[in-house]
Amino acid sequence: MAAVTMIGLGIGGALGSVSTAIKPDASVKMTPQAALASPTPTPAAVMETATPATLEVAQAAPTPTPAPTVTPTPPPLPFEETFTYGYSVENRPLQGFRLGTGESARFIIGAIHGGYEWNTVEVVSKTLEYYREHREELPVNVALYLIPLANPDGYAAGRDAIVGRMNAHSVDLNRNWDYRWQMTATHGTRPVSAGAGPFSEPETAALRDVLLEKRPDAVIFYHSAMGVVFSGADRERSFTYELTESIAAATGYRHQTEGIPGQITTGDAIDWLSTVGIAGTEIELTTHASISEAEWLRNLKGIRAFLEWRVPQSTVVDDGSPENGSLPADAPAGYKWYTIPDGTTLLDIVFSVCEGSIELDELVRLNKIANPDMVPAGMRILIPESCQ
Image (cartoon, rainbow, N blue to C red):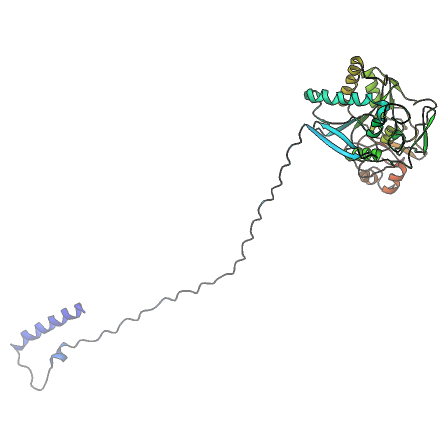
């Protein structure tokens, strides 16, 4: 409006000056309003620029990133652990000790014949104390399981061969394992009860279970008193012969391969171990008395050899005799011996080695395998000759 006022004042001033010089025509009537009127400007059309509509595109909700699953790291095993693996007929605990945390389990077991062989408790207990005090001597790859007293009821019953040797059911526990078991066996030539059936006794059943759970590479059963070492039967199924040779060389005890003449030792523990592919040996101390320092030291040498012993590795053996030097074993017609390599399962053998020429169930029956899921490397089994 300020601009309009200024324009009006300018026109008015000019008209005032003209009125003194020119006489207006009387016929023309002018009014101040008419004189001051100016064309009304047509307002310029304001063009509004249309704001384009915003197209909203629906977006998928972001997928939440799942929180990472954190698997807790289990605490490291202690060097030593005490465990109870069962109970005897008279409810005494069956106790064991583990030293070391290596992947190769080794078992040393004493007094399966109770108080009659009481000094075997002594030698296993001395082994426990020795490696407690000299843990640096235990190979890092070994977990050593020590069971000083496998027959606590017999130990409590005394040291004679009639009562002290047996468990509380009057069963000889080293005749109660599932290898050619028969109800009556002998100790020497004296008949002994082998129980109502294989593993009828809680002591042997519990020991079997812990052995199958831990799957040791090697096992020692201590006995007395013949001053020899025995290897197990069925050498084609385990490396019992090689293990026993190693211990015999270290201790100086003679390796007696033929067993005890005249004795019926059906249902023996290390014979059963062979059937499940575990190398076992029996060490016989020289007397039933407390072991001397000299005998302890020779056994310590044997235990060191036992802990350092490696399971031999071999492959298919076509001629029926193992490559590792054990006694030859003749395979039945149409079959040959095969030593299971490390990391190979029975299914691998069925489909890769034998290419389906034998069924898994047939392979298990043929080789009398107790648990197809627990077959160790180094175990020798029968397979058809057509297998690669």
